[in-house]
Image (cartoon, rainbow, N blue to C red):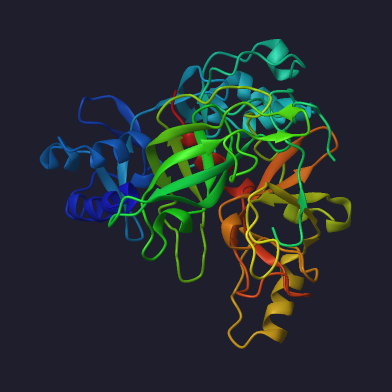
Length: 421
């Protein structure tokens, strides 16, 4: 059973009769002060619930009320800052340097403070050592990629191809070292042990990949066991374009999978998941992380945005590509996307604010094998992970009917609070 399915059922049973307080602060069993949050917003509680050595009687002592039907627990204050230093989760007004950053006119300071959110992700931040001055300015030099935490967005450590050049259905072959954050998920059949790739994902640090929840919890899904990085041509052992050859593909086992606890397969809401790799991914010309988004693109003019998708999906209705493809796609306002679905489909999906639409051009769309892959915003200097491929029509590339993506920006705090070194 997937970790989050099991944990959700167990949490409802464990905390159904016990509670302390529904206020923001609470007292933990060891006498220390904690914060009363929904159980799935507390990484340490999720780990305790999933542990085979859990003690139900002890776990009940952490209960502190409910948010509607969701149990709340008294969570510890321990957390990690954006650069991976240990800190304490507390009200932002109690953390001077982050409070000052929020009021700053420097967008790097504001972004750092925003990425420091923890637990509920509202007014609570991970207060640790103040960031080094050169970090808040985002040094152009990329350090060794030895951290499980996403690189600073304004550094050269994420969202940049090795050659720094920005050169699927109806897509084009990419350069051999283009989109080095692209990942393929390997699945193992339970009946015959056959290993195949199906979904994609995006590397965001040396230990974490973002993908779609439906790639983990789909009906009849095989269990994903590995993540393949540095792939270009799935049909060849060694990938070369003319005399330019890539490093060997790197396959890393999966240590943990965190699907969003509110994922709904019926309406595809919260269709996002986080994969923790069993060992750190190397940082090479062919394996590099993409940046998490700097802002919410849903509030921006689509005409000002340049977005791309990439993957190994179908290049036409019958043929799946073995070579990594990319495609430039227009961003469509969600309300316009909804109107298109409503006017042309017998059973249109109902979109919501945490989804994005892109594409809708004849013969050009994400399809099948691209599920879970990234929708990437190109800023001219870097790529940002703004969306995750969620769903589309059975007939890919139908004019006027865009593909639907999970918007990543609203989940930035959720992603960060589940990262660990």
